[in-house]
Each structure stands twice: as C-alpha cells, then as structure tokens.
Image (cartoon, rainbow, N blue to C red; front, side):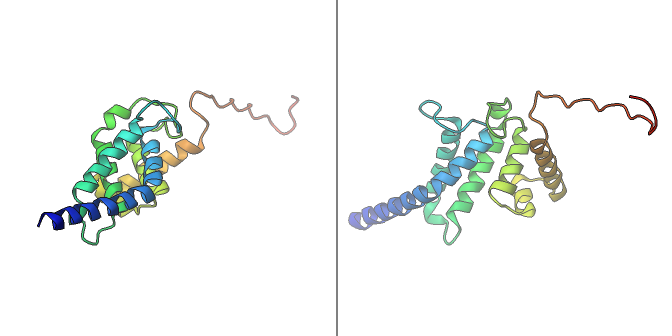
Length: 166
C-alpha cells in the first residue's frame, strides 16, 4: 500500500515538474506583465515570481483532480484570480512595460493579447460583462499606443487662411 502511494506521489511530482518546466517561462512572463515590474533580476524573489509560485502551488494542489482539464489554462486562471485579489499591491507603476496601466487594465490586456483568451472567457474569469472587458482592452491598447506617460504632445499650430502671410 505504501509503495503504491509513494509511486503515485512520485509520478504526480514528475508530471507536475514537466508541466512547470514547459509552461513556467510563459507564465512568468505573464506574471511579470501583470505586476508591472521591469523584466530581469530584481533580488531574490520578484513579485511576479511570488505570484506565479502561488498559482503553481494551487495547481499542484488540484493536480489529481484536473481530469482532462488543461493545466496551463487552470494555472493561468489561478494567476489571474490571485492578481485580481492582490491588485492593490500593484497600483503604483514599477517601470515595467505595462507599468502605466491600472492593475485591471493590465489584467485584461495580458489575458486578451498576451495569452489570447477570448473576450467571453476573460469576462467570465473576471466577473465582468463582455462589453466592459472590450472597453477596458480598447482603452488599454490606446494608452499603450499613445505617447509615454510624462511627455506632452506639442500644441498644434493655429490654422491660417490660405492667402494669409505667415
């Protein structure tokens, strides 16, 4: 009995380790975008690493009960839920790529564009109407396409009549 349980636990740990090794990089990139941190080493454990570790721990706890469910999708949902629950920690920009967006804007943008989650799925995961997710995504993309924060647009020159002297 003990040998079977030990073998089952060993197999579970190996399967999860293979999953984490394969999906960890992409999930860490998503977590880094969510937290608004600049990529790269930032001490022992960055906020993104802590967020991902918590999401992976939740996935590992449910590993045997996933039964055909995509573990990557499950971990991504856990990552989004943990981030949404802790969003107040990430209000202030930290200089990352999406640092000038609000936590909710970052979450929607990462789910929709980086992860390719459909509007309906993102809305269901976040508990928002589809129209709201669409509006947040549109606004976030517009903000990211605009000028970097802190820069001012030059004032347009006043229009002159066709025959007026400069």
